[in-house]
Image 1 (spheres, rainbow, N blue to C red):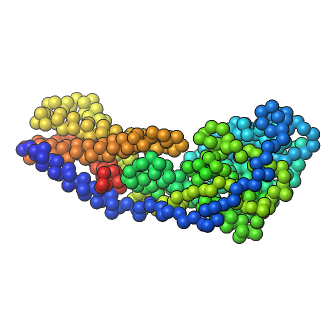
Image 2: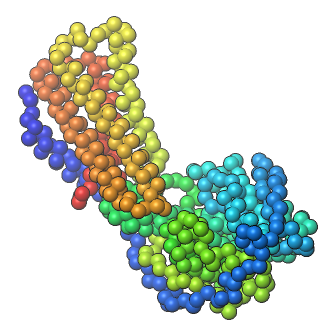
Length: 501
């Protein structure tokens, strides 16, 4: 008895509606950040004072001479390589330590601005980020702050550095590290925060993701998929609250933001910073918004924004006079469209541990099928000589297609997420690829469901016709069908069957 294609199509459609319903019921609250109502002070901020961006004597190519020194600095559980660039002019100079953003990297990323600053009379130290105690899954901002303070002590001990004018500079993730270090060491002379989030890492990443998907014209389902993944991630550092460390700052603060930064909710970041500093009684802050600057203070990923390095050098060299400017917030008008909202925490069944357990169980089911057949053949029990031999080969082919489609779906989802990450900065012309990628992911989910229905129908028809599967065949069926069922439920939770398309 065979079931017609029309009937199979109806069954698959009903199951798809059921899976969409299951996904809707089991999913966490939707992530839908509201528009940001900006404070009046950000609607028409004053222009940056001309004195802050005046040309810096000796800076730039062909300016003052400097020397470069390489050294090794002992840190907790490892030794870090550092590079110091110092002007050759006599006397003691202001100095600071570069603290990196997220990811592994070396201090070489600061070479261009470090050389510019050395010619301008500022000593800088850039160092390689630690590899022990820092990873994608786990990072200790306090440990990173300890590294920064070790480097600051190295600078203070130099005869060409004025210890009373030696401070800390941090970019992006360094904006969570530097305040900890500054609060631990009041002798740090100043704090420079570049593209500093000042909200939790999870809120910052979620805000950047939402902005990115809006620019890519991505369907709502893409945001649901990614935020459900984020909501199930159990990385403790993602919910780090930086406000206590900010309240511990007593030094003068310079905070720089670019109006074209796609990664930082710069209005809320500024509000969080000023609120924390006011609570601690520290009114010595200077906040500047640089027109056209991105996350790295560059214009479209190229040269530094024209006012960035002059603002930085003039502020540091003119301390303490610049510690309390007449205009605390100035520059280009920042426009932040949406609030930096928290990603809803996933229920227990959406936790990353449950996800990996589900995928592992599905993988075990898929692996069990070929292993089972191999064992059967090695034991000399060739399936070709069993009853109803014409039934099993057809079912086996369907099972193989199911497994390949399931594996293809997993690969497609991973590739799609990677695609979104790759388009996080350069997004020109990227939206067709995002639309196509999302369509492929969803079509593979539907194909997986359709193949599952067809295979179940073939097995049911065989059983009605008297086919008696052997224990080995039952193991193969249970492994592949069970593994695919787990993948279908997982796909339902992440919205791959949701309506509208």
